[in-house]
Length: 215
Image 1 (cartoon, helix red, strand yellow):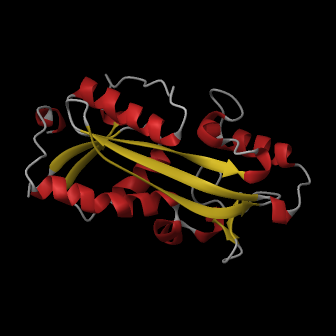
Image 2 (cartoon, helix red, strand yellow; image 1 turned 45 degrees about the vertical axis):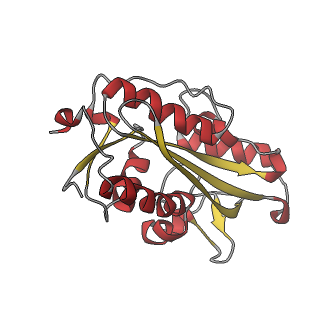
Image 3 (cartoon, one colour; image 1 turned 90 degrees about the horizontal axis):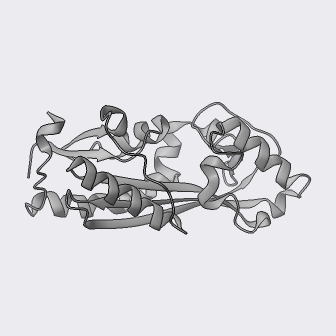
C-alpha cells in the first residue's frame, strides 16, 4: 500500500475540507484541497442530483489536474418545502449567499410551519475519479432531523445551527464536531467510502500521473 497516495478534495469549502481530512485520517493519503491549486477550474454544477454533481466535480477536476479527485455534493432537503433547498442548498439565497443568508431564507420559507412538519434530512454524495476522469467509487448517506425556528450553536457550517437531531434535542451547531463526526451525513458517507479506498490503494490501482504536482 502506498505510504502517501495523493488525493485532492474537489471543494473550496473550508468546513468540508476540515471535516473530510479528519474523516479520512485513517488512510495513508496526502490530501490537498482546491485551495492548493491556483489553476483549478470552476466546475459548473449542472447535474440534477447530488450524485450527478459530485461526479461532475470529481471527473472534470481530475482530468484538469491529472490526479485523483474526490468530489462531494451535499445539502439539506426539507419535506415541507417539497425537497428544497436540495441541490441548491449552497446558493439558496443567491449565487454568492452566505450561510446566514441561506439560513434566513430557509426560516422565512418555513414561516410558522409547526415542528412536526419541519422534518428534514442532510444528504451527502461522494464520487472518486482517477486522473483519466473515470469514476472509481461512489457512495452516499443521509442524516435525519428537523429545522429549528431559530439558529442555535456556533459549531459547524451551512445549515448546522438550524438542523436539530431530534434524539439529542440539539442542533449540529450545538453538538459540535466530535458528535457530528459520528452522526453526520458526511461522516456516514465517508465510512462507506473508506473500504473502497482501501481496496484501490492495496490493489495497486492508485497510479496518479499527476502525483508530482502534490510534492
